[in-house]
Image (cartoon, rainbow, N blue to C red; front, side, top):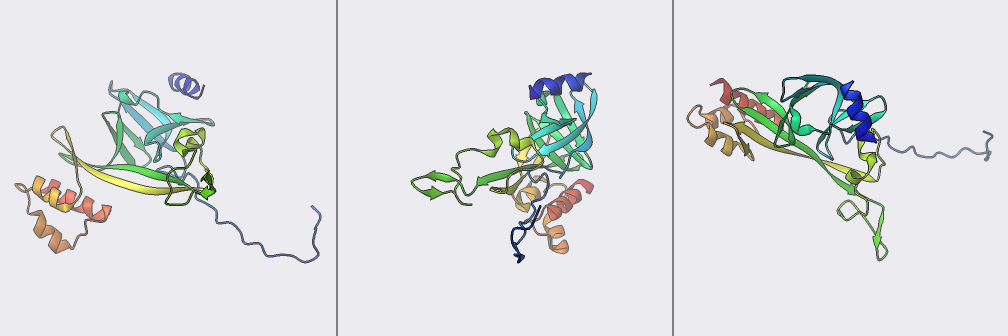
Length: 220
């Protein structure tokens, strides 16, 4: 029913104790923590046909899907293979082989990030008197298998860990980018990236520095 609604909409007290007790407040979890943005944003789906569809959008890091919100209904866009690109707030995305990548920088080539989250469920019995913990991935009910994964609030017993993988889209090929060494090799004929990295003291562990290095490759 969730998908049908989405498709149709897109196309057309008294005190008990005399003495007050100090009870520590639970830490409030951020809203939409399994999404790229904490709330749905105005965006556009650019189809391969050239048509553009404005919608309230977000990117779900757990299911790795573009999710559409219409009124109170949230669901993944059902025909992602027909989407070429998407813009959500200030972020741009591209769809390659039915997978969604965020565009970090665009020149003659593209620097892309595959963003996702690894989910661990804690505090749940897993058999033989054992309870799941942060290092136990064998929880009985996976978050991504429940409708709850599309809501803006999920229970605190789900621990989410961000994972970002980086790629180059060059000459129609998607190339994994694990370090600066690979980047320097791909653009060895165009730039002296090693000298630039030394001068700028860039660290390959940060996304910001990776973007700076890629921009240098595109400018020279």
